[in-house]
Amino acid sequence: MRKLLKVLAIVGMSAVVLAATSTITNLALGAYELATAQPYGERVSIEGGEVNVAVTGTGEQTVVLLGGYGTASPALDFTPLIKELKDEYTVVVIERFGYGYSDKDATDRTVENISTELHETLNALGVNGSYILIGHSMAGIYSLDYVNRFPGEVSALVTIDGTVPEAFAVPPKTGLGQRFLSTIGWVRWMSALNPQITAPAAPANTYSQQEIEQIRLMTIWNYANPTVIDENNRSAENFAAVAGLAYPRELPVLAFVSRQLIDANTQWRPAHEQQLEALERSELVVLEGGHYLHWTNSKELAESLDAFLG
Image (cartoon, rainbow, N blue to C red):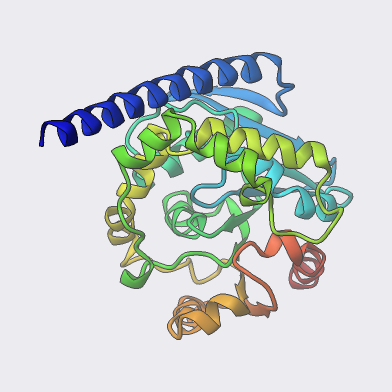
């Protein structure tokens, strides 16, 4: 028994030393990377802190892109769609708190706070109305709240496999475990061994190698930060907050739904159809692809948007 306890003590001490060494190395590398990386976009000051915004194109109509939950760098993640839209529209990517180069120590991630911060950011940019709002995944929930909280400002709403306020969509809670893995460098070492785990699953040459590497680094920096964890853990609360909401009847809504999620969940398409049925003008488009349709189907997204707005 004494020998077993001695072995366990040695193993335990080795694990502590390894974790401490990995943590120090991870923090040091992260500090160096942040200091030497070339950031994109501009940081806009609002009441809760600073939000990073990336603006591309000079078109008369403004398109505002909102990333989904857990997307480390929305501005880079939307690259294929931005390329398709930038010649015709002014494209604005808002990286809400916890993502991209925005602050990571924001207030509670309620739908009210997220919508208000988006509104304040757009006002700071001088975008005060008649813009097209495009939300991916969880941003479908925030968009539903936003168009009701600030009626008349959004000229058309587009959702890319947008989350709907249904119980089946609530993700499990996360917390200290993921934060611990992030701190000790687990994401860094796993992505170093297999860079594909952080790279968008897009066709070859969709993203440059520099963009793929920057996404990898930003995943390391942003993974499971306190703001993102709080956003995830408030999912059920936020879904409940919008459960009774409907899109304004006069708002044009274009909903893209992925075939992959339809096949995986029989409720996915009917839930989206139900959201659209009372609107004066709406369209549901099913695309062959996964949840991140803007990685693989950006050309179809842009063409459908042009036709819908036509």
